[in-house]
Image 1 (cartoon, one colour):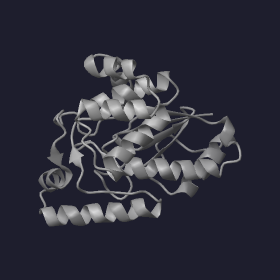
Image 2: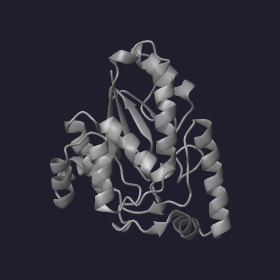
Image 3: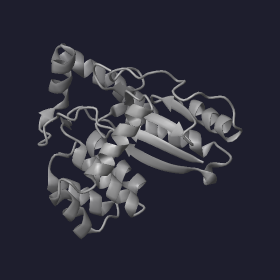
Image 4: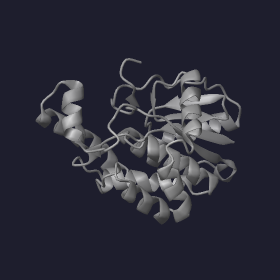
Length: 234
């Protein structure tokens, strides 16, 4: 079985959803037969490459709320993260994630995609590191197992793995995904949002038994709502 997961490093529910999915996978008897592939999705492709916008300022502007209200929104997400044993900081920065997705494709080529994604999530949500800094990305990539020379080459060439990122995003649109995280099992069954671990386990079991779980049955995500993030306007 193959599970493809569309996600974005800037999406808090993708961070939480990955942990919940892995907990559900751990409870699936045939887990050793499951291949997990991470796919690219940009929630904010127009975000500045510098990645220097405080996330609370971004949320306040995006939703038309005060900074205090944005902090309260973040506190609710932090509580959900804590429930999965995840650290969560709201003093992180918001920026463009295209380069991170390109590195994740390089990571897949080297068999370290999952480890690299975990490292990016930790750096962003648990450590609030400046992911708009190429030197920081290089350090994280090498620490996750990528060859230093290849990571540097990809970061220096804006077209390296860019077609692969765009292809993932086209596929997401073709599958009807307007938000992330979005999970697809064997291109037959799907589930959206950072659902509880039990939901993922049951979906895997149904898919394994060729049960009826229509693609997208879990419903559309919301714009950073209770369990997922969506592109505004979709």
